Structures are given as C-alpha cells and as structure tokens.
Image (tube, rainbow, N blue to C red):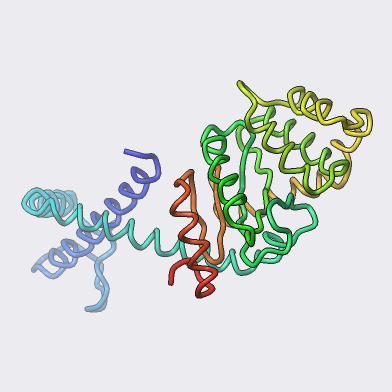
Length: 277
C-alpha cells in the first residue's frame, strides 16, 4: 500500500473508531448509575470519565460492530480518499490560476515551438528523470506536428545534486544560445546516457560552441538562481511531487502519459478554453 494511502487510511480508521467511541460512550453514559460527568443531551460524556468497565464495554461494542460490518471501514476509507483528492484538486486549481502568468510568460522560462503559439504546454522536468526522457519524443512530435503550439520548459531538479548542477549549466547556456538552439541543447542533454551532471552539461555546451568561461560564471549568477527559485516555488505551490508534470490550460497532467492524451488536451483547450470540453 502506498505511504499516502496508508497514512490516509490510518487517519480515517482513527476517526471511525473515535466516532464509534463517542456513540458507544453516549449510550453508556445514559445508563442508570453510570459514573460519568453530567453533560447536556447533545454532548457525549468525556472519555476520561469512563470507568475501566465502561471502556471495555465500549471497545467490545466497536470491535463487534466492525467485525460484523467490515465494509464500513472500506467505505469510510474510500470516501476519505475521495474527499482528500477533491480538496487537493480544488487547491491545485486555485494555485494554477494564481500562478498562470509565471508559468506561461516568465522571462526565466525556456521556450520551444512557436513563441507566439495559441496554446502553451508547460513541462516541469529533471534531466535525470527516465520518464522525462521517455516523454521527450512526445514533445518533439507535438512541436513538429503542431505549428501553433508553444512549449515552456521548467527546470525542476528534484532528483539530487547532479540534476541541480545540470540545470544550472543549462539555464546559463540559454543566455548564449539563440532561441532556435535552446531546445537543441535541452534535447542533447536529456538524451545523454547515464547520469546527467554539470560535467555532462558543460560537454554539451562545448559541442555547441559556447563560451565555457562565461558559462561557468553565469551558472552561479543571479539570473540562474532566480529561475530555479521561481521554478521550485511554482512546483511546491502546485503540489508537484515528481517529473514530468505537464500543464495545459487549467489542467495538470502528472507523469509520462503518452502523446495522444496530451494532444487531446491541447485540442480541447484550443476548442473551448478548457482541458476538457
């Protein structure tokens, strides 16, 4: 069972048991001679007021009920997960609206495809993410097959120090490259075999004839720091926990979902302004 599901299930189970305890306690509190503090009819007796015998009786009632009705816990867990997902989706949607300008038009963004396209696809990626490498061919196919598509690439180095080093060099390289060469650099680096780090990124820069001395200086400069800080802040605000993550219109698509789902979402945004028409 995934950690999130286990934690959520435990919380729901605790809530169910607590509710059952209150109910059982209320029943016992109403029995003659019960040694409990007096409460109003709408308030259950405090748990601390139960005697050992009453606590044992409550535990017995709960155990007996749950053994006879195990589906209650399953239903409670399922409903709890549904509500949690709904809450997260609402929060994510609000964050998406607030972050729209920074996502789509930030000066720190790496733009590929048509810079004035009618639909923007944003991708958060990590140079050491295997699924990002897998998704690269989808991005290439989309750019090639859709001349009106604008792509914004967001370095989101979540897989360690080597990823961070590579992103710093890549963002510094952007300062020397013409717009039509930035995606070429990105592609070469993402297609690298093995772990991608700063050394590999510098090697790609040399292949493309960049000034390495300037590159190393720019990699530690304020523009690169600002870009990474903005990207990490956006990722945190949107609740992104991994890469790749795609944003199209009002939809966040986590993971390498394949070409067709992304193409369909782009089509819907183009048609009705939303990720799903």
